[in-house]
Amino acid sequence: MKFPKLKLDSREKIIVQRTAFAAVAFILVFFSVLSYSILFRGANYPASVDKSPVHEVVEVDDAVLNLIEPDFSYSVTRLTFGGTCTTASLLGIDAYGTFGHEYSLTGAGHFFEKIDDIFKSDDMTLLGLNNVLSDSEELTQAEKETPEWYIAPASYADIFAEGGVDALSLECERTKDYGWVGYAETKAAVENSGVVWGDSGKAIYKTYDSGISTAYYCSVLRESDKDGIIGWLNTASANHDFVVLYLTDSDLSETPSETKKSLFRAYIDAGADLVVGTNSAVIQPYEEYGDGFIVYSLGTLIDGSSKYGEKYSVLLSVELRSRGGDVVDTLFGIIPIQNYDSDHAWCPEVADSETAEDILANMSMPEEVPA
Image 1 (cartoon, rainbow, N blue to C red):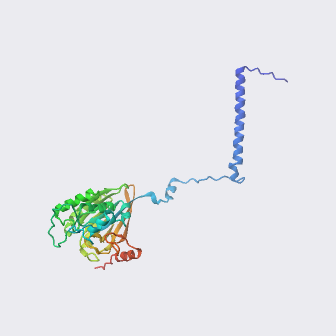
Image 2: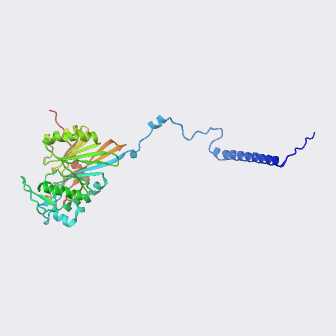
Image 3: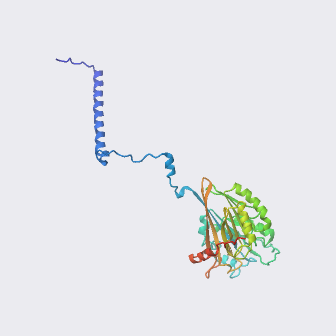
């Protein structure tokens, strides 16, 4: 039986040709993909073994529970506190063997050059200034029980600026040696150097890149100031993440008095996170108390009133770890410092390991005998 031939016009011929071409192309692509799958992708798996998924599916809650938090998940704010510094000579003289003479030989950058890496790498360094800074020739010495007056040119403020110091307490024994005029000129000299100052009438407030808000109050240690300081602490602790008291006194004993301990602890109870004492040439113990930390005396870091004063002091290092602007952990560290040796004075440096161990051993607070 013969089938009749189909007669197609030119338009129909084109449609048939294109349909045939598409069918052939599809067949070629199909066999190419199949061959690739067999030769390459399937080659890594034994025959008749099902391929397992590369990653198992884990529920979201389980995934969160199994996360290990990396160290970089929090921000770090570093603070450093040191003792007071008498960066001047008696009556401002610069005779041989005096602090003034040393400054004339070495310049401002010399005095903290062995520890300025600590000061320059942190977010805040707070020390105490224990002398007057002024270029005035008409200042008169203030009347006081001890006839010693320490003054230096205003340019000596650069000692702190070049050393990486950010803030100074002016609530120290000798900053009013030349009356209120000398005190005002000292403030101006410190400000002109780019360093911040604080005293009992002016607290220091600072918010860091981490979002942590801090408050620092500098004062002389007086029992009569207790209520006023507690009032400030109540407000500061409610509005800031970390609150510090920097207190100066002239206690020269190796252990703090009962009155001093009572005041420092009361300030922690009132909201301070840290209370540090200084201006006592002698280092005194530290302790963890309540929710805060106390160092009763950091000692004197630089003593221009004597070439051979107390040989050692300490720095307190504080590391605030925060996340989302909230402090999640606080670390405290004591850094023993050698103030001078046979080769130099007024140029403190980190003590060697053996000396550091001795200093730290002597800073432990003696156990209190229950009453």
